[in-house]
Amino acid sequence: MAAACAVSAHAKLVTKTIEYKQGDTTLEGYLAYDDSFSGKRPGVLIVHQWMGLTDYEENRAAMLANLGYVAFCADIYGKGIRPQNYKEAGAEATKYKTDRALLRSRVNAGLDELKKCDLVDTKHVAAIGYCFGGTTVIELARSGAELNGIVSFHGGLDSPTPADGKNIKCKVLVCHGADDPFEKPEDLTAFEKEMRDADVDWRLIKYGGAVHSFTQPMADGSLPGAKYNERADKRSWADMKSFFAEIFN
Image (tube, one colour):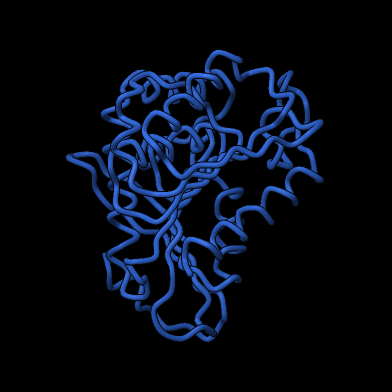
């Protein structure tokens, strides 16, 4: 699929839907880059929230492309699997949260696809994720994947196999809502212990007044405990950009 990255276009923003595989499963990701930038550039993998790959992730990909990165939205669920409601989303997310080996295989397939792009400087790669995707990029790091850093936005921070922290080769940034009711204090404590015990270069930033899904405008509060917070959204994006400036230096 690397040839898809070499498509020329008159518009600055180039986007393309890309099919790829993990085992026998067909996945459907989304690529974005700005062709006004020349040469190779850092690549950023984006992992979706529990509703699957949506316009939200595609918009984030465009934002990253405008910053000069090649962005690729991974598809964890599979082509055509796009939950239509919270019940379906919960069922899909649970499949992978209860099978971390499969989750790691799916996200690594996305990382591999990003690195195939001719425009990506494979020595400068990061991954970001939202909610379910935030959990997923932490699992990507725990799998021992070769990349410079990961950013988890309001992801689950449980630590089911603490020893896997020793596999982490990259820097870790966690952007967390200080008032997120979905995050158990014991999970947060376990995550911090895992990072310390494995001597990971990590940081955890808490945003006051923010609950779950604080970066997602579609989180209107209809799901209790999950609501958009513009201030925390802007601050966490700025923190991510500073993190990228450090890890891609």
